Length: 338
Image (cartoon, rainbow, N blue to C red; front, side):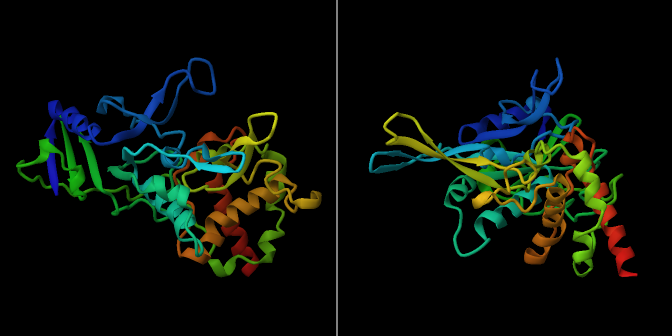
């Protein structure tokens, strides 16, 4: 159901949403950038549509809103275990189509990946509704079209910011606040980007053989990658975590268990009992991530895990391009097949 709001009505709609929801969107965090006097664009709560930053790609994805970087799962006191509670107020998160597709992949990993669901993820995820921001141009490093993630239709509502007005397509009646009631419908069909500057061809599933695993391609990344993990923490679909048991008194009978994001690139991630580590080199870790994003996940669930947001290319301090890595892999697969 489409609606049009005038410029002076936009924030009234947001104010009405805020009565029932926490609303998150990309915002500029002043002074938080990598260099002096620079900011970083990440997700934060907003009180006005003027707070939103859309002319720059967010450095971090919206997943941290409902999948925290660090989360206390439960606390223990002697023989008693107390599960933590979360804020009961639901969330509305403004996302682009690629990120909405990325959230669906996270849902697959946490909720449809085996016989059991991740209840800690589920309890937060159930409280989230998504307002999708129309995206028709993209940025220099985006390759969502190549990954089939430029279009998303499973939103609760969609927005188009126009000069002097805001267009909305509301699917979930809960997002149709008072200002929209008894308002004439407007014709609003969400448009999507159809071509990126960057084009990526992932190798077909049947082309990924042992020859690709043993190829010299990965030695390049052994020398270039510094294992900082920035590509993982900025990615919408990376889901790995580690567990930390933290004791807070000398008697060791009071503490908490925390879930903390992990990175397959960081040293120590693949350590095993007995001191074993089967991916010691940085190139081997790059291979593991690449194959998971464009092959392993695809084999299991029928689509690429990577959604082509390009954040990993944006944040890498060594200027490693994941999109170029995929294209190199595809070219090598063609050569091996000949």
